[in-house]
Length: 142
Figure 1 (tube, rainbow, N blue to C red):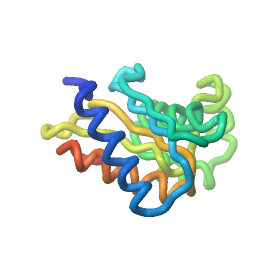
Figure 2 (figure 1 turned 90 degrees about the vertical axis):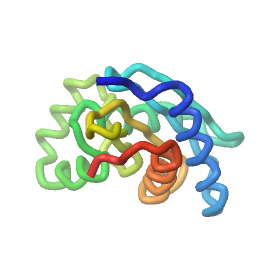
Figure 3 (figure 1 turned 60 degrees about the vertical axis):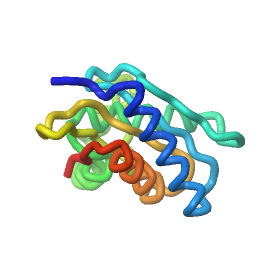
Figure 4 (figure 1 turned 135 degrees about the horizontal axis):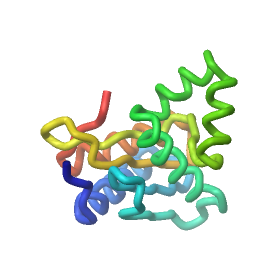
């Protein structure tokens, strides 16, 4: 299995930022992690608030840690809050369940990393991430 490269991560973030500007969103922050949870690339727009980097990384880390997008995790958390509370404790608070954390797949369907975004609504964060992944010629996990 390969990991998302720096070149791919840069394309993802730049395209995601462009999508956010096209949509007229609030300042955004993006974090791209490889399949082992290591930071590959990070960008924070001017005027993005203090915790946005941690939130973006937490969304990416949560998607990797649980093997699904944070949109799905949020839906699961609503039905099983005690499990996700325990999961938060086990992860040292790293797992976030708001939309905006998406797994990156290669052509073979292997997870090669994840992207997290923060700054606007979860749905808008997620839309930017998906646009970035697709712009890099990679696939988004269902």
